[in-house]
Amino acid sequence: MKSGTTKKQNRSSSSVEEVETANNEGLCDLFEAELKDMLWAEKALVKSIPKLIKNATSDELKDALSSHLSETEEHVKRLEDVFNTLEVKIQTQKCEAMEGLIKEATTIMNETEKGPVRDAGIISAAQKVEHYEIASYGTLCSFAKMLGEEEALSLLEETLNEEKGADEKLTQIAESVVNMEAVTSEED
Image (cartoon, rainbow, N blue to C red; front, side, top):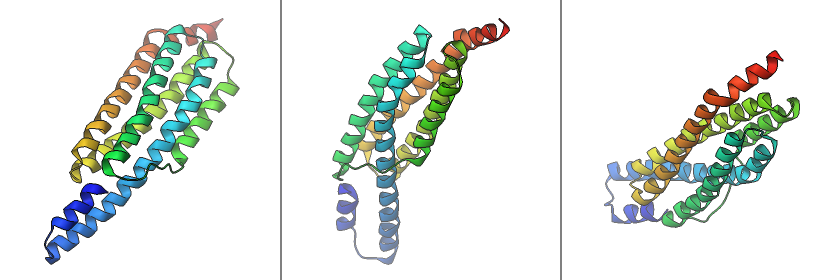
């Protein structure tokens, strides 16, 4: 990492600073690994969100997913910008958690009939993804702040705020339309 290296070069060789540097290197490595994980996750979502859109019936849900697909494409670019600001090679690392969440969404779609109940399942699956992303970006923001990576922090906070917004939008759609339609369709 650019700034980690710069900070290390600017330090004197006292034992306290050596311990701090070693700890920063460990956190830098973890930060990098988590960035690779999220880049894989966001790229996987760019491929899977269109399947959610195709399987949704609620126009409001389709619109929200389409909007979030555009944001997710931007999240990929923003993560690549984070790598560039850190002067680290842009790489992905398979995100097992996201792979599992995407598989769960596919299972929900395969096991429900097209309509309001499937829409409710899509929202459920999408919100699990959003909550994973919110937790992950929150952690990345914390790491960036601790490491003094202000530019990376700014980029990551922007994505974190968008993920929170997407989650709120999905909750609004579920509570105002989809869940009620799902209950009504079950009564028929």
